[in-house]
Image 1 (cartoon, one colour):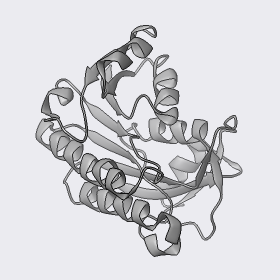
Image 2: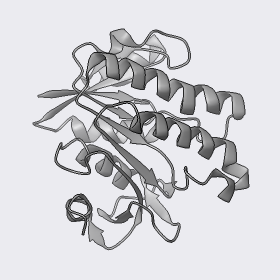
Image 3: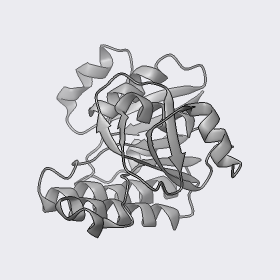
Image 4: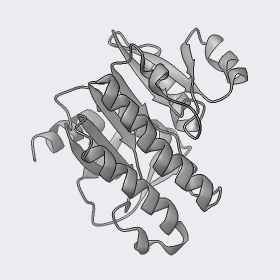
Length: 217
């Protein structure tokens, strides 16, 4: 089984990923936590965890034995510009560097729609700029990657159906459940390899949509 480091495991989307991967026959999730007291969440689930802080620590130790990384940490753009820069940009770059040194097989990044056009949303401009810079750094890192840029996240039950494209011509919402499945499906090496795509709720089954995107359909 491949070991998958979940960076941002204590967040809403991270917890969904952990729950889904807990039943996987192919992937073993490892939760990265910032504070040791958070370990009880994952010990109760009989999940492995490692301690690491995106803002402070040398992150090399957390990559030991890790095959792939899913990055879902983030400020959400709601905690002020300094925190956003520290986590969404600099923290992401730090774990990308550590992943490069550790020769991980693939790095899956949760980004945000319009991260390449931050000025299109003045209220979220700093957040989107930070996300865009982290995405650019990942694309240029030499790592195999997938960058998922969802629309507005909701806590609704996942429908399992999406609309995805390198660039959508409209905005929209998507559930955290469906985003979690998109990120997990991106672990499969032939799918969406070295691709960046946007995603909203749609009419096509997630697996079919990702296969078609991978094949340029």
